[in-house]
Image: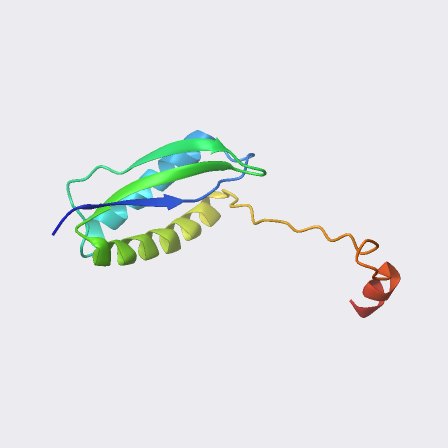
Length: 116
């Protein structure tokens, strides 16, 4: 089938070393390409840092699958394994934080504290 380029966007924390992030991501991508059915085996994965986000640097990891269907499994397995490897390496993937203005919403902050 047609080759399908796969991109996984994962924002490492601004405090993570980018060389380490790139190295770990490429190593995991290479493992995926060698072990998951439907990958283009001779494709060399690579990382490109894209931009500064609110609390992270946006990056894209490029992998290649044989087609769209295969790409779903490739992306699925890559994300699962990368999260584990990042955690093991001490690389933080920041999650969005939502701040609530309780006064603006007409909520008594003391009432909220009593419930928790």
